[in-house]
Amino acid sequence: MNIILLSGGSGKRLWPLSNDIRSKQFIKIFRTEDGGYESMLQRMYRMLREVDPSAEITVATSKAQISTIHSQIGDSVGISMEPARRDTFPAIALAALYLRDIRKVPEDEPVVVCPVDPYVDLTYFRAFPELVRIIEDGGANLALMGMEPTYPSSKYGYILPETRDRVSRVLSFREKPDEETAAGYIARGALWNGGVFGFRISYVAGIAGELLGTPDYDTLFARYSDVRRISFDYAVAEQEKSIKVLRFSGTWKDLGTWNTLTEAMTENIGEAVMNEHCENVHVINELNVPVLCMGLKDVVVAASPEGILVSDKGESSYIKPFVDAMDTRVMFAEKSWGSFRIIDIQEDSLTILVTLNPGHGMNYHSHVYRDEVWTVVSGTGRVILDGEESGVAAGDVVRMPAGVKHTVIADTALRIVEVQIGREINVTDKVKYPMP
Image 1 (cartoon, rainbow, N blue to C red):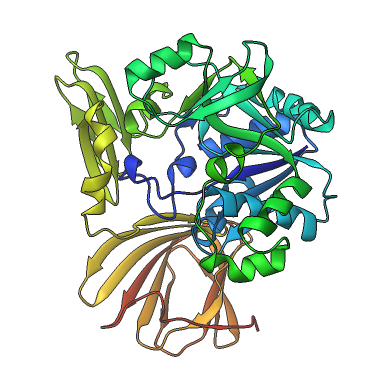
Image 2 (image 1 turned 90 degrees about the vertical axis):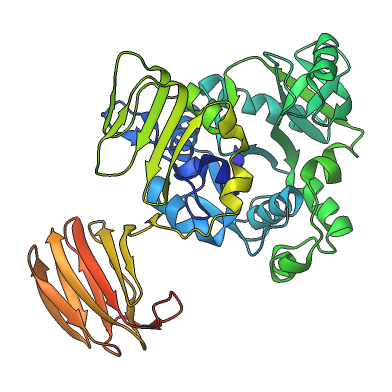
């Protein structure tokens, strides 16, 4: 199968654990068999591989998320990078053309598109081949997977099928209704629109030519920042006459808020202590300090380097405008080479804990306006300063005045405290060079 995973969004409804780099799909909250934790992205990718080990998986995402994706699921996955945010139809069209023009997938091949962040089980992915068969059999140009509703929700769009059969033609779509209207839709056999659908690459390529002005990858990529913002539902699904829906009644949850996310948590994460009067309280603590909860009911506590949230679970759904009003900066991020965490900010210095994975290193670079000092906390590796290489281990201190070309390569997992010193500390103060 050819699978496109849609990975986007800033995840502000899950502040303070999410930001523009670490969206909700990258937060590690699901316990694994080895005692660790995995993210929504890792969980989805693992289950997809269980169902179809040979699946061609492509992630449609922004540049800011690529390093995190490679860090969490490796380099073998395909990446369709959006140069700018332009809603779901341009993103899906770009990914489909990437498959055809870059990965050389035949244009008559079916593709299944799904979001990267629902909470599902293996039955969800086992339904994907059914979507492919609907397309291959020629019964429809577009095949959707509709989720059997469990309650009349006002948070989801609805698909109204012609019949209650497992596969049915689609009569119409309805945008997010009020709960009373939603109950009426459900009584008529309506399904939640979970954003999962299948089509042939040639089908979307044709629509891209009509709506976006180009049917090829290179041209669309070059013009992407100027193309029309339009959702896939509006551009394609609501206009298509030859369309069917597959009824799905398995596990499916949209974990878009703290309230729904904690429903999937089996335990608290990080150091947390609760007294016997706490009820339905969940804690995710990424700080190296204890969190004590007493007498709380229906509360979520989330603590990270970017802030601390203490909220009633129901109220947590309304967090976004408050986060939008904050002057925040990214304090933690995973990268393909490891991770960084900002631990102190002063007017003329910035202190960062850098973790490098074995075999990985930084770019060879210099700075114009700042000096840097590295203190190796643990692990072993090699530093290169102006072309001269030397080994480093725990306790070593390396100084790099402004203008000195430098890099570090980890032989084992390497942890470094990096202190940046200067009056103009910013991400643009970096000059990159080829490795010596």
